[in-house]
Image (cartoon, rainbow, N blue to C red; front, top):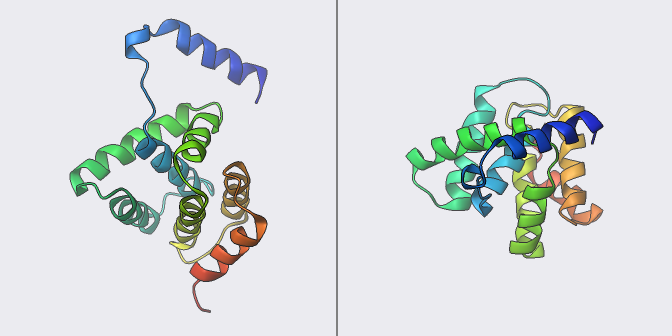
Length: 150
């Protein structure tokens, strides 16, 4: 985390009244981490957006209209976030190990959604899996399970 990033974070916090500061929900944290995978390769592929929509609808069992709103909010959160700590710590606190492994599997699904795995996507999944305390063997196993046949 850069000094400039820290300064920007505190500046935003000081400028907004306490009542306007949002509370990160578990749903928003999950959506934000999945958005991180979608934007890791700096390409905007409609197949990845559709996969994100499907994953959120399935994982969070929310209405399709609410999914679009959640996706937009998550993308904004990710763009403004200094780091992933807030999202990752909430998920670690609320999800058991198997749920975190399932989330990593969904990250892989999203990374493969456009038919190819970019090195930046793989790096981001690896980093988030580490932050979620998912073992390396489960990181690899989930990758192999969702990897498309070639």
